[in-house]
Image (tube, rainbow, N blue to C red; front, side):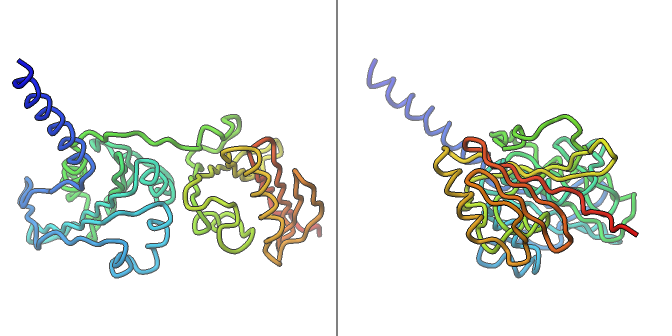
Length: 291
């Protein structure tokens, strides 16, 4: 009995391993789909070393979040062309992070299974560790069905994992919908604020910060960035690093062990506070000049 059980267990374990590996791979799309669309060339694969060859000027965001590879498929129906880009990221959190940066105002596409936003010229989606974009250069609404089909085929395999994000650190009250961002380094952070060069928040390419806009009582909008460090000591070290490496354009109004009050070149107040291991950065609205 024991000799019969061992091979069975080995086969089950091998099957589980193969299934898990299959879920992590970028899906292989068919040569043809309905409505006369056919692949025009073999799928092209890009790695970290050559991603710039495909998206020159936009690769930094993908690399910052943890990029593994990109597979590009091109289709044609004889009149129009479609391209579907499948970015395999390090994990589901990285894929969501890219999606939040790229989505703009979120308009979910009817018929698309995963989380998505889009219009006739482009559909953007994320599913597990995949970030996807289906591009329709002609902008014709007639091609939407094929784009939706390709996205759904690419995400037919179960996601396998869910994002573990820092978004839960953000308050819900007065939060502006669709303003949330994940931040893993200076590329995305500098879209919000320039605090200093390099890894100014001591994230080491691993820790995620979360950001969102919030409406104030007077109708203005402020931005909050929150990051939680593994322990209080690392939080304190991160704030010291920030204080010692501030951008020269920032003016320091107050500097304490647990707080910084700054103003940027537009005279916008920036309040940085540390409570325990949680660092909070509030970017106040830019003051309106007095006439």
